[in-house]
Structures are given as C-alpha cells and as structure tokens.
Length: 176
Image 1 (spheres, rainbow, N blue to C red):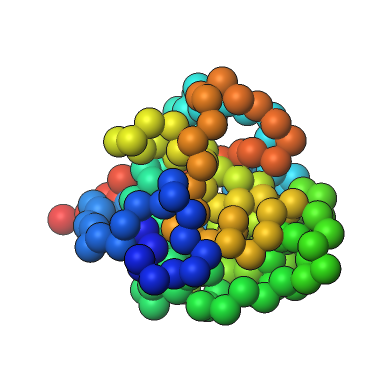
Image 2 (image 1 turned 90 degrees about the vertical axis):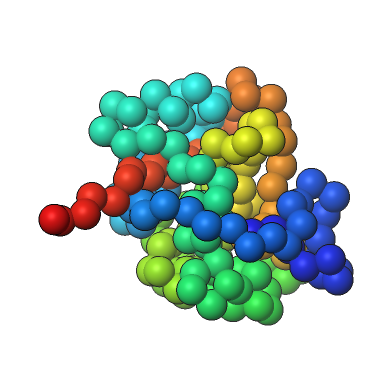
C-alpha cells in the first residue's frame, strides 16, 4: 500500500510504501450503482455513500481494499500498468484538458488486474480509512499524478461535488 519514496509523482498525503494485508472481500466492478454504461452516482458525502452501500447489503470499501483492487496482483501504479496513458482512462488529456464524468466502463483499457473498471479517473471514490476521510482514484479532470492508485485526498466528510462518487465492498463468503 502507498507509494515508493522515490516516486516523483508522490504527494505528501500518500502513505509510505508498506506491506499491507486485507481480509477476503468482494468489490463492485464499477462505481455505484455498479452497472456498466450507467453514470456513477456523484454529489454524495461520506455518510450518503455509506448509506447507499448499506441499502445494497454491502459496505463502503476500506482504503486498503480499494488500493489493492486498483493496483491488481502486479502492484501497478495505475490499474493498467506503471506508465500513465492519457487515453486509457477517463482522466485529464495529454494536453492538460479536463474531461467530463462518463458512463461506467466506457474506457475499455481502464481495468485493474482484477478486471475492475474506472479505478483511475472518471469519479474519485470515498473509502473508509483509519486516518480519517479519504477519497481515492482521482477524477476525469485530474492529471497523471492525481489518478494513481496510491493517491489520496482528505476532504471533509460532508463535501459533495460532481466528481466524487464511490463503490461498495462486501466480505467474501467461504463455502465450507
């Protein structure tokens, strides 16, 4: 979890590179409402996101889970690899032009090693964290350094805007 100390794009809010374990969990493939081709739900605060996940029989993802899912088994900086591709995910263009929030799964190459869509860009996502309120993943109007898997921001829990959404998680069930 976190970013390497020598990472030139590392920002002060990021956690230091630390081996981290998670329990077994399942994470939504797309941003809430977890439907390919749907616009993600945005303009929600932390409590709105938590309530929507509860209503769906799930919970808001923990930061460690979200970052593990974003980096994939290869532990990439971006869901798709270690080098930023301005047209691989719904992020700021190579010319620095912001994009608009789009439908889930529209950028077919924007997949983590676990097959999850839009973990980089489109909408930033609320997660639960031991260090307070955290938003992960950057958004459609953010540049390369701000859409890496390790990137995190700390907005107030009631902050609502058009580029912040969420996805839900649930404990994995073991078949005994």
